[in-house]
Length: 263
Ligand SMILES: [Zn+2]
Image 1: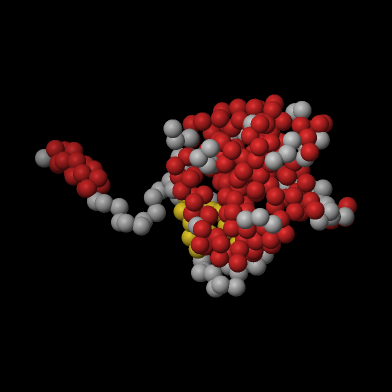
Image 2: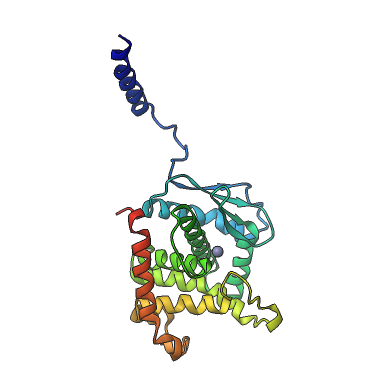
């Protein structure tokens, strides 16, 4: 008797599992979800833009449509004047500070143009960069180079290949986020300020990398978005390698992430 009831009990347990609906608003396992620790007060313009435009939420929705994640990937937005964004491998979460949004706002102000767009695009690049760290950690992706370079590559690749209605739009988003590093270039730090031991490439290098990957992705469209020939920005010594550099990056990321991409 007892032996007969076991399959029946299992049947009901499975049936109940499928019948019980998920409460509305509950975080789905495997989704990237943004949690604000606070509400902007109004005297922090960059944070207000992040809040009003939902840039981090946009990035999370995009990742959820693009990548399979084995568990929830929370993004905590915290009120901290220190500009920072990082992936925490201990609890597998991403943290972004209000200070980072304010730094993007300062950058956008000095760059001129559409402040809201520059802040939005910089948040996208940062969010995807941190997702790159998360993917490397969660899926144990092999990498022989600096992880920071790989995270920049993953972010740039996601933007170029999946963001925007047209290919030119993806290039525009990446170039907009590269402006942040360009403004840092403009500050022309002294040799003492350049941390050669740092895990990140220098802002100068990150800027030229991102321009180079746009160029390697599509030179014609990149020049169209820039409104000038690539040679006006990238010296020939680098520019001749960009097509091959992007092709290698594209190939490597498809190989490493192919199993986790939602078709
Ligand atoms: Zn990083």
